[in-house]
Image (cartoon, rainbow, N blue to C red):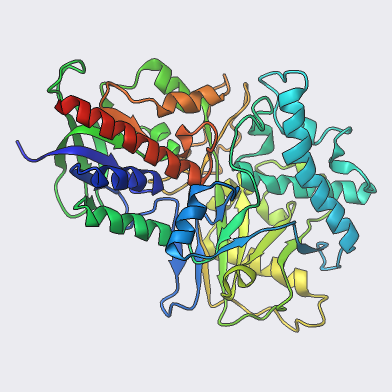
Length: 497
């Protein structure tokens, strides 16, 4: 029998790293196995070879800065957080015609106030919504405050801009439960952009683990997690099997293990658990949805847009924007295009297009060349009537994420679906890569809580999908890792007495 670790951590995202950090500080022997050739999981900061440009390809914001542990960590590491403040962007119509700033202000206020104010209040304090009701139903109803103070043209734009919130939910709004909208008690305050790159936090966690003699192994994909004997026996261990491209499958033994892989991976059944998950655990995995947020990053040799520019919003053609179907896709320009200006946040000549929910999944069936051309055409339309921009230059580099097709993510973050949701992504994502399927029963916060519970007093779980109050966030993932690390430390000490 080889070495027996106190704990094996499966997955090197922020939750697994946080748990490993806590365990090594308590003196436990820890082995962390990560399938990628890097740490961080859905946190990844791309950096140019010359070091002059960088951009987060996954998590990039800290949501709710008051009391948020990532704010404290950032301050300790000397990292700059760029607070978002009130929505501030110019908007232009499809042909580049500027939209009246007062109309833009009304659009932004209506969208944010309706989604994060009115709908949350109505869901939690109004008549209890049926489990089958989606956020889209009250949002786009004729009585919705989304349309207040707008003419018919403005109402169409408001409905269109509201669909951008699919980047927040990670899913089509018709697939997000209204009953549980606003139920969570997350951190309050402004949002902030991690201006120096989120990977700095990952680097800090890695350094702490290595200082504590933690063993980190990359490019080791875990394929099986098994109990070696009777779950009730004190001497039963956990056997973890991994494979890599450079060696035969390897088996490791530990007293306990933490599984911190994304919900999308749990849905895909690529890791075989023995014993199998109890029926209620499997049901909770199936009941939750796993959404998507992809990004197109445009890197330029230098900034060519105005120093005063904030973010860019290009409105779509005027048509009913909330009736998008798989055939009415990203290239029909039926959705707004929101470009995040990283010069304002990080002083790097980079623009990022955020594509969440419906279009986030749809884009993965197109080639990098097609996506790049569409993105550049959209920017050219935005600036074609701008006297200060003679020509929109081609970027020197384009980076495109495909989180749904990533076998070690299979999506971006968790959402709670209503009952009776139909899967309409068939044919959009390559067979075998779809981790967005959900149970017809719908989900609830109880499913998130169920996924946080350990099994057999040996197998623990962490990740944003195990946090009922902070799911779909980097700080939620981090906090679950801290909490599960503490639980494992207590259990290890109790077993040694």
